[in-house]
Amino acid sequence: MAPEERSLVARRGLARTGQGASAEAASGPVARAEADLRATVEEVTALDAEIEALSAELAGFSGRWERALAAAFQDLALAERLVRRIQSLEDGLAQLAERLRTEPSPAARP
View 1: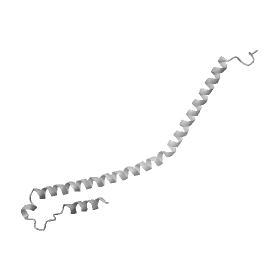
View 2 (view 1 turned 90 degrees about the vertical axis):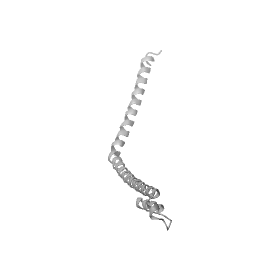
View 3 (view 1 turned 45 degrees about the vertical axis):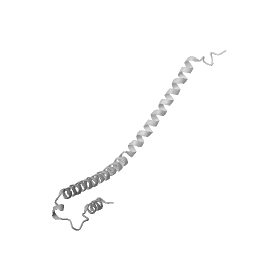
């Protein structure tokens, strides 16, 4: 439901249903309360429309940001995988070097 439609529904819901309302009743505390409520509903409706507009702007920005940085994030993910692979190879080399230092060489075996 569009904000304008909600506002119309709210106004219709607040309309007086009595046919014989006197001028005194129209200017009394009930009328003032209805006017205050109507103003509050209109303010809430305006704020709701503003939030919807900001939400649409945020969604647009998010899409542009993701498209603009997608390639960079993909490159970063590839670089991080490469770093992990290199670290794994370094760890394997360190283990092999330690084993070579601690085990006797094949030529030294009887």
